[in-house]
Image (spheres, one colour):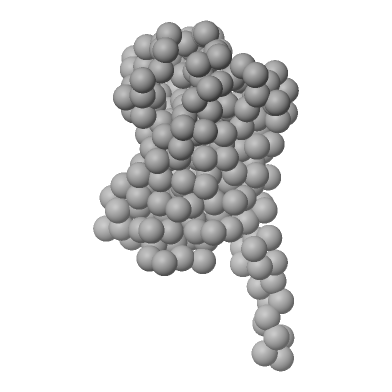
Length: 242
């Protein structure tokens, strides 16, 4: 599996489970309807774990343009590869969003509120405030990327024996995303990933949904710019401290 394919697959798995838990909690007549924020944040954490486990050995499992940019700013990833990674991440996110619509078509039809339908695909502020919403996305992504930059290799070689966590090495980033959702996610829905928000938002705009809400394009730049700024700030901060 090439890094490009790995980023598509990893981001697809992230998003199909992430948007999937959004649908399960938000849409009418699902078994998970109304189960709440803990279920959503836990589902997204497990989604990150799944995507990282699969893509990690092949691409490093960025599965997030902000992570790719943050690693490049920190000098840990070549800038020449950033565009292809971002393209792959958007492809994976958009295909996942389409699949979630396909799986939940009956439940989308059973749900009348257009904003709820849109919320399966992308984020929106709990209280609209441009500066605060932007800072929320910046701060959440800062925590994510800053923490990732301080990860250490879990493997130890002694007498030709390799001791490590294997696939469980994906667990730390999953726990960080879980913590961000629980602690910082209540203001904007913690996109902290431009592909996670903009890709499915575009898919939402194209789907034949009944009673569809507008795509809130006026807000859509915040989950893109905020994470990129947060990732860059995290990289610069890590360079100063290391």
